[in-house]
Length: 338
Image (cartoon, rainbow, N blue to C red; front, side):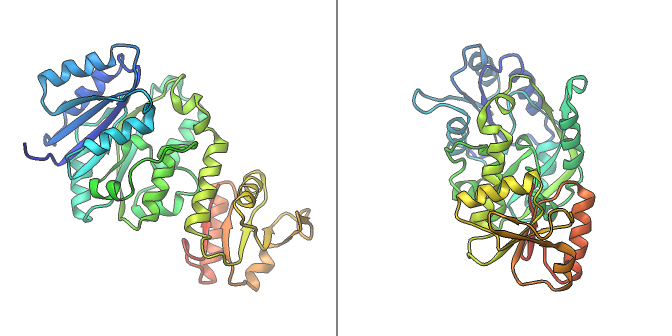
Protein backbone atom coordinates (compact mmCIF):
# COMPACT_ATOMS: atom_id res chain seq x y z
CA UNK A 1 0.00 0.00 0.00
CA UNK A 2 1.32 3.44 -0.93
CA UNK A 3 2.16 5.65 2.05
CA UNK A 4 -0.27 8.56 2.51
CA UNK A 5 0.78 12.18 2.53
CA UNK A 6 -0.51 12.79 6.09
CA UNK A 7 -1.00 10.55 9.10
CA UNK A 8 -3.44 11.90 11.69
CA UNK A 9 -2.94 10.81 15.30
CA UNK A 10 -6.12 10.61 17.35
CA UNK A 11 -5.68 9.43 20.93
CA UNK A 12 -9.04 8.58 22.51
CA UNK A 13 -10.17 7.80 26.02
CA UNK A 14 -13.88 7.62 26.74
CA UNK A 15 -14.66 9.74 23.69
CA UNK A 16 -17.61 7.79 22.31
CA UNK A 17 -19.81 10.90 22.27
CA UNK A 18 -17.39 12.94 20.13
CA UNK A 19 -15.10 10.63 18.16
CA UNK A 20 -17.63 10.08 15.37
CA UNK A 21 -17.82 13.80 14.64
CA UNK A 22 -14.02 14.06 14.74
CA UNK A 23 -13.64 11.23 12.21
CA UNK A 24 -16.35 12.63 9.95
CA UNK A 25 -14.52 15.97 9.91
CA UNK A 26 -11.52 14.09 8.48
CA UNK A 27 -13.63 12.30 5.90
CA UNK A 28 -14.76 15.72 4.60
CA UNK A 29 -11.19 16.94 4.01
CA UNK A 30 -10.33 18.44 0.62
CA UNK A 31 -7.02 16.54 0.87
CA UNK A 32 -8.04 12.91 0.64
CA UNK A 33 -4.62 11.23 0.84
CA UNK A 34 -4.50 10.70 4.61
CA UNK A 35 -4.68 7.95 7.17
CA UNK A 36 -6.02 8.29 10.70
CA UNK A 37 -4.56 6.23 13.51
CA UNK A 38 -7.08 6.04 16.34
CA UNK A 39 -5.42 4.89 19.55
CA UNK A 40 -7.93 3.77 22.15
CA UNK A 41 -6.41 4.39 25.57
CA UNK A 42 -8.18 2.06 27.99
CA UNK A 43 -11.64 3.47 27.30
CA UNK A 44 -14.51 2.07 29.37
CA UNK A 45 -17.12 3.30 26.90
CA UNK A 46 -17.74 2.47 23.23
CA UNK A 47 -14.90 4.61 21.81
CA UNK A 48 -13.05 1.65 20.30
CA UNK A 49 -16.21 0.12 18.85
CA UNK A 50 -17.22 3.41 17.30
CA UNK A 51 -13.80 3.89 15.72
CA UNK A 52 -13.78 0.30 14.48
CA UNK A 53 -17.12 0.86 12.80
CA UNK A 54 -15.63 3.75 10.84
CA UNK A 55 -12.53 1.66 10.01
CA UNK A 56 -14.67 -1.11 8.54
CA UNK A 57 -16.15 1.41 6.09
CA UNK A 58 -13.02 3.50 5.44
CA UNK A 59 -9.63 1.75 5.05
CA UNK A 60 -7.83 5.03 5.74
CA UNK A 61 -8.80 4.64 9.41
CA UNK A 62 -6.77 2.21 11.53
CA UNK A 63 -7.55 1.41 15.17
CA UNK A 64 -4.98 0.57 17.84
CA UNK A 65 -5.14 0.12 21.61
CA UNK A 66 -2.69 0.78 24.40
CA UNK A 67 -1.78 -2.15 26.60
CA UNK A 68 -1.66 -2.49 30.40
CA UNK A 69 1.59 -1.01 31.69
CA UNK A 70 1.85 1.34 28.71
CA UNK A 71 -1.23 3.53 28.92
CA UNK A 72 -1.93 7.25 29.06
CA UNK A 73 -1.86 9.97 26.44
CA UNK A 74 1.93 9.86 26.02
CA UNK A 75 1.97 6.12 25.39
CA UNK A 76 -1.04 6.42 23.08
CA UNK A 77 0.46 9.15 20.93
CA UNK A 78 3.83 7.42 20.73
CA UNK A 79 2.12 4.19 19.70
CA UNK A 80 0.37 6.02 16.89
CA UNK A 81 3.46 8.00 15.84
CA UNK A 82 5.53 4.83 15.57
CA UNK A 83 2.86 3.21 13.36
CA UNK A 84 2.39 6.27 11.14
CA UNK A 85 3.29 5.92 7.45
CA UNK A 86 2.68 9.44 6.17
CA UNK A 87 5.34 11.98 5.25
CA UNK A 88 3.67 14.36 7.69
CA UNK A 89 1.90 13.78 10.99
CA UNK A 90 -1.04 15.87 12.18
CA UNK A 91 -2.70 15.83 15.59
CA UNK A 92 -6.45 15.86 16.06
CA UNK A 93 -7.91 15.03 19.46
CA UNK A 94 -10.97 12.79 19.55
CA UNK A 95 -13.18 15.59 20.82
CA UNK A 96 -12.05 18.22 18.28
CA UNK A 97 -13.06 18.97 14.69
CA UNK A 98 -11.00 19.79 11.61
CA UNK A 99 -12.07 22.40 9.07
CA UNK A 100 -12.45 20.72 5.67
CA UNK A 101 -9.34 22.51 4.29
CA UNK A 102 -7.14 21.99 7.34
CA UNK A 103 -4.95 19.13 6.08
CA UNK A 104 -4.63 20.57 2.58
CA UNK A 105 -3.56 24.06 3.68
CA UNK A 106 -1.10 22.81 6.28
CA UNK A 107 0.32 20.18 3.94
CA UNK A 108 0.84 22.75 1.18
CA UNK A 109 2.61 25.09 3.62
CA UNK A 110 4.79 22.25 4.88
CA UNK A 111 5.81 21.51 1.29
CA UNK A 112 6.57 25.17 0.53
CA UNK A 113 8.89 25.52 3.50
CA UNK A 114 10.66 22.21 3.01
CA UNK A 115 9.40 20.44 6.12
CA UNK A 116 9.39 21.36 9.78
CA UNK A 117 6.31 22.47 11.72
CA UNK A 118 3.03 24.11 10.68
CA UNK A 119 0.26 25.14 13.05
CA UNK A 120 -3.07 26.91 12.54
CA UNK A 121 -5.49 28.91 14.65
CA UNK A 122 -8.18 27.25 16.79
CA UNK A 123 -11.69 28.27 17.66
CA UNK A 124 -12.80 27.09 21.07
CA UNK A 125 -16.31 25.76 21.58
CA UNK A 126 -18.98 25.66 22.91
CA UNK A 127 -18.76 29.46 23.07
CA UNK A 128 -21.40 29.83 25.80
CA UNK A 129 -19.22 27.96 28.29
CA UNK A 130 -15.89 29.66 27.56
CA UNK A 131 -14.13 31.21 30.53
CA UNK A 132 -12.41 34.56 30.06
CA UNK A 133 -8.99 32.90 30.18
CA UNK A 134 -9.75 30.79 27.09
CA UNK A 135 -10.96 33.85 25.19
CA UNK A 136 -7.77 35.74 26.06
CA UNK A 137 -5.60 32.79 25.03
CA UNK A 138 -7.51 32.37 21.77
CA UNK A 139 -7.02 36.06 20.96
CA UNK A 140 -3.31 35.81 21.84
CA UNK A 141 -2.90 32.80 19.56
CA UNK A 142 -4.35 34.78 16.68
CA UNK A 143 -1.52 37.28 17.07
CA UNK A 144 0.92 34.49 16.19
CA UNK A 145 0.87 34.93 12.41
CA UNK A 146 4.26 33.57 11.32
CA UNK A 147 6.93 31.11 12.36
CA UNK A 148 9.15 33.80 13.87
CA UNK A 149 6.35 34.81 16.23
CA UNK A 150 5.76 31.19 17.25
CA UNK A 151 9.41 30.84 18.16
CA UNK A 152 9.77 34.08 20.07
CA UNK A 153 6.50 33.50 22.00
CA UNK A 154 7.18 29.94 23.08
CA UNK A 155 8.38 30.79 26.60
CA UNK A 156 5.34 33.00 27.24
CA UNK A 157 2.64 30.45 26.43
CA UNK A 158 2.35 27.40 24.23
CA UNK A 159 2.08 29.26 20.89
CA UNK A 160 -0.44 26.86 19.32
CA UNK A 161 -2.97 24.32 20.53
CA UNK A 162 -1.61 20.83 20.17
CA UNK A 163 -4.57 19.68 18.10
CA UNK A 164 -3.56 22.21 15.41
CA UNK A 165 -0.08 20.75 14.89
CA UNK A 166 1.33 19.25 11.69
CA UNK A 167 4.99 18.30 11.32
CA UNK A 168 7.17 16.20 9.08
CA UNK A 169 7.28 12.68 10.45
CA UNK A 170 11.07 12.46 10.12
CA UNK A 171 11.40 15.39 12.54
CA UNK A 172 9.19 13.73 15.13
CA UNK A 173 11.12 10.48 14.71
CA UNK A 174 14.41 12.32 15.23
CA UNK A 175 13.13 13.82 18.48
CA UNK A 176 11.66 10.47 19.60
CA UNK A 177 8.22 12.06 19.88
CA UNK A 178 6.73 12.47 23.39
CA UNK A 179 8.69 12.08 26.59
CA UNK A 180 7.23 10.26 29.56
CA UNK A 181 7.62 12.95 32.20
CA UNK A 182 5.55 14.65 34.88
CA UNK A 183 4.78 17.90 33.05
CA UNK A 184 2.68 18.84 30.03
CA UNK A 185 3.89 16.52 27.27
CA UNK A 186 2.48 18.68 24.47
CA UNK A 187 4.26 21.86 25.63
CA UNK A 188 7.50 19.96 26.28
CA UNK A 189 7.35 18.57 22.72
CA UNK A 190 6.58 22.06 21.37
CA UNK A 191 9.69 23.46 23.08
CA UNK A 192 11.93 20.70 21.70
CA UNK A 193 10.52 21.26 18.22
CA UNK A 194 11.36 24.95 18.53
CA UNK A 195 14.89 24.19 19.72
CA UNK A 196 15.49 21.73 16.87
CA UNK A 197 16.07 24.47 14.32
CA UNK A 198 13.21 23.22 12.13
CA UNK A 199 11.23 25.69 10.04
CA UNK A 200 8.04 26.88 11.71
CA UNK A 201 4.97 28.47 10.13
CA UNK A 202 1.33 29.29 10.87
CA UNK A 203 -1.63 28.99 8.54
CA UNK A 204 -3.38 32.10 9.83
CA UNK A 205 -6.89 30.68 9.67
CA UNK A 206 -9.18 28.98 12.16
CA UNK A 207 -8.86 25.40 10.98
CA UNK A 208 -9.48 23.48 14.21
CA UNK A 209 -12.52 23.60 16.46
CA UNK A 210 -11.18 22.81 19.91
CA UNK A 211 -13.76 21.50 22.35
CA UNK A 212 -13.67 22.67 25.99
CA UNK A 213 -14.79 19.99 28.41
CA UNK A 214 -15.13 20.56 32.14
CA UNK A 215 -13.52 17.25 33.05
CA UNK A 216 -10.84 17.02 30.35
CA UNK A 217 -7.34 15.97 31.38
CA UNK A 218 -5.93 19.41 30.58
CA UNK A 219 -8.23 20.92 33.22
CA UNK A 220 -8.04 18.24 35.92
CA UNK A 221 -4.59 16.56 35.86
CA UNK A 222 -1.68 18.07 37.79
CA UNK A 223 0.66 17.65 34.81
CA UNK A 224 -1.23 20.53 33.14
CA UNK A 225 -1.21 22.90 36.12
CA UNK A 226 0.31 26.38 35.85
CA UNK A 227 3.14 25.23 38.11
CA UNK A 228 3.91 22.30 35.79
CA UNK A 229 4.02 24.61 32.78
CA UNK A 230 6.41 26.91 34.67
CA UNK A 231 8.72 24.00 35.48
CA UNK A 232 8.66 22.85 31.84
CA UNK A 233 9.39 26.40 30.66
CA UNK A 234 12.32 26.86 33.07
CA UNK A 235 13.84 23.49 32.11
CA UNK A 236 13.73 24.40 28.42
CA UNK A 237 15.23 27.84 29.05
CA UNK A 238 18.02 26.31 31.12
CA UNK A 239 18.72 23.70 28.43
CA UNK A 240 18.34 25.79 25.29
CA UNK A 241 19.10 29.37 26.31
CA UNK A 242 21.30 29.30 29.41
CA UNK A 243 23.25 26.17 28.55
CA UNK A 244 26.52 28.06 28.08
CA UNK A 245 26.58 28.96 31.81
CA UNK A 246 27.27 32.58 30.91
CA UNK A 247 26.11 35.44 33.18
CA UNK A 248 22.44 36.31 32.76
CA UNK A 249 19.97 38.86 34.06
CA UNK A 250 16.33 38.52 35.09
CA UNK A 251 14.22 41.53 34.09
CA UNK A 252 11.12 41.64 36.28
CA UNK A 253 10.48 40.12 39.70
CA UNK A 254 6.73 40.06 40.02
CA UNK A 255 4.89 36.83 40.73
CA UNK A 256 6.00 35.19 37.46
CA UNK A 257 9.58 36.42 37.66
CA UNK A 258 9.87 35.15 41.20
CA UNK A 259 8.47 31.75 40.24
CA UNK A 260 10.93 31.53 37.35
CA UNK A 261 13.87 32.51 39.58
CA UNK A 262 12.97 29.78 42.07
CA UNK A 263 12.69 27.19 39.29
CA UNK A 264 16.10 28.26 37.94
CA UNK A 265 17.61 28.01 41.41
CA UNK A 266 16.59 24.38 41.56
CA UNK A 267 18.32 23.86 38.21
CA UNK A 268 21.54 25.53 39.34
CA UNK A 269 21.05 28.82 37.47
CA UNK A 270 21.23 32.12 39.33
CA UNK A 271 20.95 35.58 37.72
CA UNK A 272 23.76 38.02 38.34
CA UNK A 273 21.20 40.78 38.88
CA UNK A 274 17.50 41.57 38.68
CA UNK A 275 16.25 44.58 36.73
CA UNK A 276 13.17 46.47 37.89
CA UNK A 277 11.32 49.69 37.17
CA UNK A 278 9.50 49.78 40.53
CA UNK A 279 11.38 52.31 42.70
CA UNK A 280 10.33 50.41 45.83
CA UNK A 281 12.33 47.38 44.69
CA UNK A 282 15.37 49.11 43.17
CA UNK A 283 18.35 49.02 45.51
CA UNK A 284 17.09 45.99 47.42
CA UNK A 285 18.40 42.45 47.10
CA UNK A 286 16.65 39.10 46.72
CA UNK A 287 18.51 36.11 48.15
CA UNK A 288 21.69 38.10 47.73
CA UNK A 289 20.92 39.09 44.13
CA UNK A 290 21.01 42.88 43.64
CA UNK A 291 17.91 44.59 42.22
CA UNK A 292 18.92 47.40 39.89
CA UNK A 293 17.28 50.11 37.81
CA UNK A 294 16.30 48.81 34.37
CA UNK A 295 16.46 52.26 32.78
CA UNK A 296 19.98 52.85 34.02
CA UNK A 297 21.04 49.43 32.78
CA UNK A 298 19.75 50.33 29.30
CA UNK A 299 22.07 53.34 29.32
CA UNK A 300 25.08 51.18 30.21
CA UNK A 301 24.18 47.60 29.28
CA UNK A 302 26.37 44.63 30.05
CA UNK A 303 26.87 41.65 27.72
CA UNK A 304 24.83 39.27 29.89
CA UNK A 305 21.81 37.58 28.36
CA UNK A 306 18.38 38.63 29.60
CA UNK A 307 15.24 36.72 30.48
CA UNK A 308 12.41 39.25 30.56
CA UNK A 309 9.48 38.24 32.73
CA UNK A 310 6.82 40.96 32.60
CA UNK A 311 3.07 40.74 32.17
CA UNK A 312 1.15 42.21 29.26
CA UNK A 313 1.85 42.53 25.56
CA UNK A 314 2.19 46.32 25.74
CA UNK A 315 4.91 46.13 28.39
CA UNK A 316 6.72 43.44 26.42
CA UNK A 317 6.58 45.51 23.24
CA UNK A 318 8.01 48.54 25.05
CA UNK A 319 10.90 46.48 26.38
CA UNK A 320 11.42 44.82 22.99
CA UNK A 321 11.82 48.24 21.36
CA UNK A 322 14.23 49.38 24.08
CA UNK A 323 16.41 46.28 23.75
CA UNK A 324 16.48 46.25 19.96
CA UNK A 325 17.48 49.92 20.05
CA UNK A 326 20.70 48.87 21.80
CA UNK A 327 21.31 46.13 19.19
CA UNK A 328 20.03 43.21 21.25
CA UNK A 329 18.68 40.37 19.09
CA UNK A 330 15.61 38.59 20.38
CA UNK A 331 16.26 34.91 20.89
CA UNK A 332 19.98 35.53 21.35
CA UNK A 333 20.47 38.56 23.58
CA UNK A 334 17.06 38.38 25.26
CA UNK A 335 13.92 36.28 25.45
CA UNK A 336 10.50 36.82 27.01
CA UNK A 337 9.16 34.30 29.52
CA UNK A 338 5.96 34.34 31.52
